Image (tube, rainbow, N blue to C red):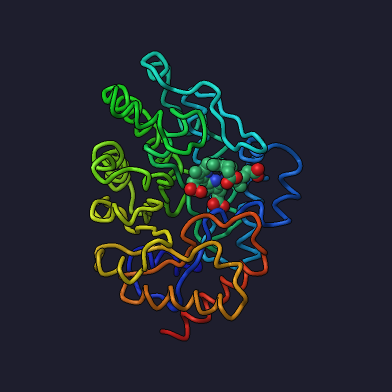
Length: 345
Ligand code: CP3
């Protein structure tokens, strides 16, 4: 197996810097549209053969060093009892937001195999089809990020309803987060049992919190998930707190093997601050994929140079690749990571 990704996660020496791209399976790829046009996004997530097919598309086309399960962070919430829709222009919508005691009480904890078997089946198919060519990353959302969708009823600008619940009804907020945490631990353990070879926890909106609010209302749940998984498995765990530079003094203590970084921090600063305690992942601005080729090569090299002192480095974008990106540029970026990092060894 091409294990550079797994080695870098654990801080072992690699022949080149492994790379994968957040949202690597998706709308910038014409081959994704071909499969997606057969139904809705949720139908695609719930059809294991097709979800596996689009997972593999970027592995074949881009030459990345890891596959990431095609699914969405929000699907377990649907099985907790919160109906979920993806609307063409608006994105994810929960038509009945969770804002009071009765709504929190009504949420259940889904069983990974009984309720989310389609995800577990996708993982099993992928392990067969990938045949150890590259490792498979499973994932979940972090509890705070997931809670924002449930409480707001969808995406949000200022997270008013979420922060309001934290401040006005902290006990209720805590009960909701406890349930999401329990659900996430079971869900990720299910993914491990099905064959996931690494796990990433996406905390996409962590950066909207003041450090003291993150400490009280988000981070304890992340730590609880990672501690529970560490008791159950040796596979690498990656924690990505988007826009999280201001939270780094805290996130360094999360217990994961790898911390993911967005582009708002220079990786040399990240390395200085995390030392040899964890490996790092990131962090080129997704819009850098719109630079001319020579400038793109400079950017890629810059990230690799900044990450040089890290215990281990997995190259990635600082957040998801955007649908307008040219597939050729994404492929070039992957080639550049491989060739430049080999030269730097
Ligand atoms: O990374 C991958 O290639 C795996 C697939 C993946 C998707 N969503 C597919 C998707 C992963 C890992 C996610 C995670 C996810 N989903 C996050 C965390 C990562 C991040 O970007 O911060 C979040 C916040 C979501 C919630 C979500 N899903 C939103 C806000 C949207 C709509 C906006 C958007 O970017 O499209 C989605 C839809 C979604 N998830 C699509 C895909 C490919 C587009 C659906 C389509 O085909 O119409």
